[in-house]
Image (tube, rainbow, N blue to C red):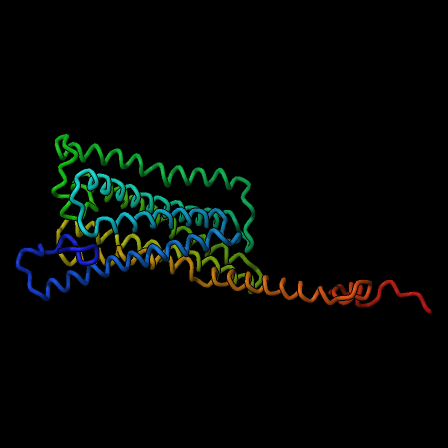
Length: 342
């Protein structure tokens, strides 16, 4: 009897079709990898989301957009786990297929919004310390409308295509159940997901390329060598971070598209493993880079300094001498004005 951990991953031969013991062992091991990898990915995405929500230095416009991307990836991983063992109920299968397509489109829309925000930040801020954006709330609402609203329009088009392909019978889910209800039928998948994702990826690549050119130009404008090196390090760190996240997400989406359109088992294996592990890979990229770790250490030093100063204040005497001992001002250390003679 199949349970949640040993349920077969569709795309492989049927377990009741006379598989050898070795094939059944490999399929069960892959199912276990998918479930465990997805569980670890969910924990990693939650950790990354909490990290960006706790530190005020990360709660800027770029960090808030990244939090929305992490939330969308979390929903993708959660819905993906629901279909691992196969979905037999037609209504649940339809709901799962449409929900996954919407959330996957949301991931790519937020990725596009993040790369555009990086490009506009590099273009408008020519200094190492970025200028405060007075319209940050207005920009965030625009990103939110694009990130969560555009997939709704694409999903509406996918529903129309799904109805046309099924001749008005939306609950005919035989083909969808073969792929664990992770994908819609051919027309709804190609025209409602693959083509829009290709357009979004082209936009992401364009923004990444323009950001690299803009970063190189702004870095070369700096006169001071230390400022120039520090700006180059910060700009390229953010650029490579978005490049890695884009490569991870697009690779998994490409494997899923190839597995759906070709039906080759090798692509199904790679897609299942990649999709199960993409959450933890993205979480490690965004939450364990040197910039975030620097914020960690700076916050810990600040708290340690506050604690030590609070303990020392209990033993300091009250009076002018205590003010002098706690002060770092050169004016007080040189006794200006000169004290009266005794």
